[in-house]
Image (tube, rainbow, N blue to C red; front, side, top):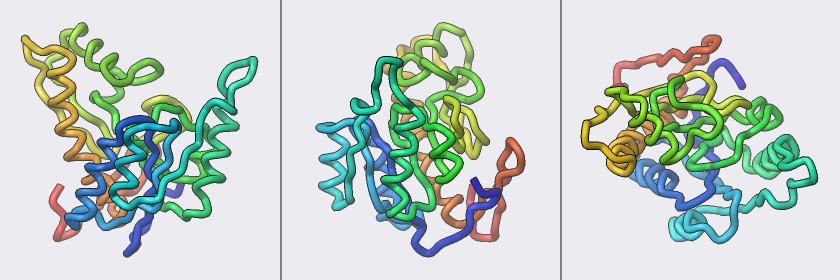
Length: 224
């Protein structure tokens, strides 16, 4: 991963999905509105037959499938082999950034060290992250803990779950009457807001990685 991601008139995105593709659809809408100076060059799903693939095709986007089944052996799932195969699948598309959009497979160093990758997590990292913290499991843990704030985090991905330099966060209140569904709706609303915004900053060359942190390089036209 380079320390600074440079600007490009046609910043190329590879979007990784595993399910309904709502994050991918939202990103494409923001691209078409002119809010994200980039293009989605391919959508890759880890599962066949998911709604996200249908939605990508309806949007006129190129799709690929890299299933997990053939990477299973007697020892379990071969994460390194899958990550390398995904890298080999994507490199011909020359992506500037891989966007995890509900992608449920942890990526190994063979991928993230070659292709800069971002993820959005439905909590304020580093809290409520790591293996097993996905979907409603996150919101259930937040409610059980009694914290008063949750939210969403956009971060660069490395080879561990929910780790890597944080790019952007936004909080939401945790209310006394919340259920996991109610909290999820509120968190997803801010996810839809900050994920495209963070990707736009990267596409404009305004995100610099400084060790374990990121620095947002503001310009006169940028509103954070």
